[in-house]
Image 1 (tube, rainbow, N blue to C red):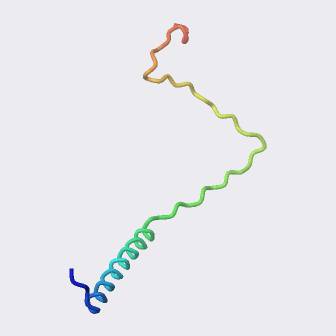
Image 2: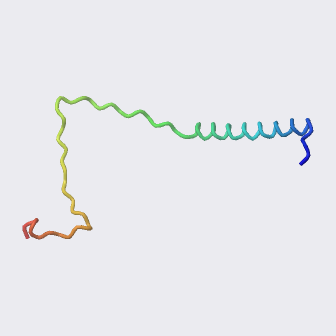
Image 3: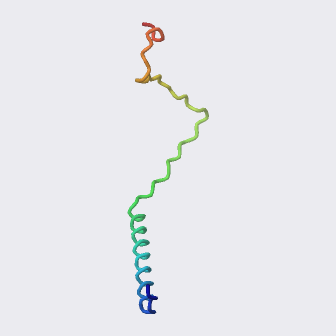
Length: 71
């Protein structure tokens, strides 16, 4: 391959810089359109933690145990 002339080198530099500028502009536009999440609301501190109700759920892959449920 033949070496590039100074004019070709300059043209190649401008093309590379234009591509980089386009990529940076697209990234900036995408970030500007993406909404930033709102900060989470602060819950008031309670004196005692509230109990959490837990509900037992039968898994579909487990067989139903009649003895366990009193039937």
